[in-house]
Image (cartoon, rainbow, N blue to C red; front, side, top):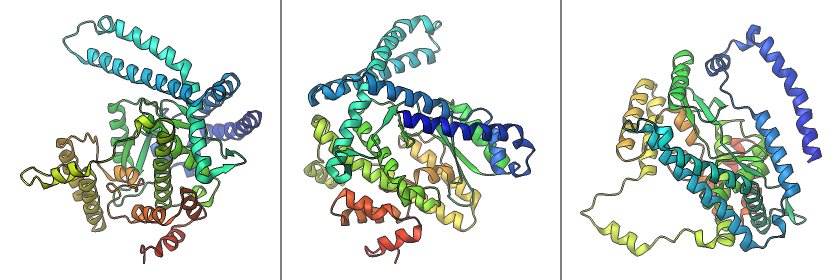
Length: 426
């Protein structure tokens, strides 16, 4: 912890003078009169403060390490503590939805009074959950690390970097893409809890003043250290996301992770590798420590029966429909038909809405963000990166071998060479 604190304070010594330079001199500096400067002006003070969050997170982790006795508990007690915490979070979420419904009801004249008892219940459960949170986090960290060691990532009985994550409100991310192509050119963390009108205001301003496609998106995790993980009552989601973010941490010490932002292709490769990794490790965490939460297998007989019912309309396939949408958008943009592509995306957004998928905005920035997670078909369209990575995983004898095969890649050309032997990019 002392070493981590020294690193943080050393970083602050560099960041603070730079921040002062930007605030005082930046507006007068010609280099700042560019696209990013215009976006910064639009955003104002709505950035997420990582320095404050990191300071608090490291202090919380240090306190938990000094006071927690979870290492002396057996696996069953650990599981009970985690599930007790998740039950509380689920109850809080349910009560909060009831409170929101009361405040949204125009027939309720005094919502604060009507919701008073519910709010007291929320406060009581939140206080109890807060006492359990650091213990639950530590237990999940230990459980994920145990599976990582089994998978060949151990170093003298531990893993490096250490598994470390904190359940926390996450920043929103402003994604900015050119209108004439789908490519992420800006990725800006913003304050948690921005209202939808505020999001719309920012996106509209970026489009109007910078002529770029913009979308503010929620995220499930962020791979700084300790990782930021969205608070959830779903143990499967948490196991997967803890592992996913550790995958990013591990890649950070290898050429692939270092090259994360070097190109859109490398960003997609990084995110897809972490998704494949997180799915596999997360599933093994559930299987080992929470077996009652293993998803049931698909009943092939029921599936065949449903597929044979010719009179029934086929179920809506989101991934297939979204993949078709992305392919058509790419075609229109390649032909220079930007406005036609944007009109088509709005038409498709309404189509998805009618079929139950509440997509607020479907534009180039949407695909630039969600298309980076290419392990399942959908937003990436005809991009072969996802299928190629799945083929490499299938061709690898273990998860560790899969990660090692990709870790040294630092260019898209290097990835193409790795996948060429499996029939891709020839």
